[in-house]
Length: 117
Image (cartoon, rainbow, N blue to C red; front, side):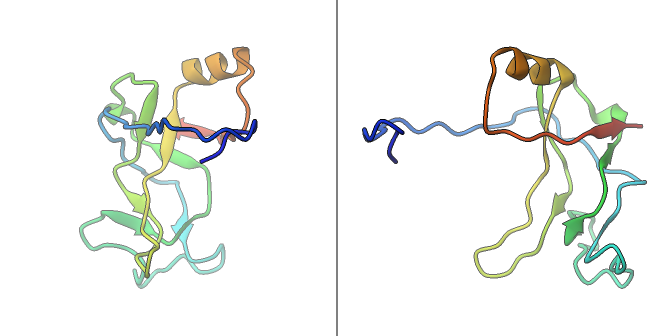
């Protein structure tokens, strides 16, 4: 991998989220499209490991699973297993970490609102 200066970057860093996973709950909408919520469960795991193909709304999360960490992940995965594609967890940050990133003028990240119930 090359840095913007053209030098080869020797170090690799990978985020490992060690907090307890949090559960996705209703009214989060997951489905194939906004008009097809996959009522037949074609893209859902019967054991509820995979919530569905696409997240169609903001995340709603069960507050009881929050252990106060700044980095969190969802227990349920979203996506499809097809070739090299794999369902993935949703990565979450705390408001405290969000404010820190803003104060440090961090770039190249996007956030969406999530709700606790």
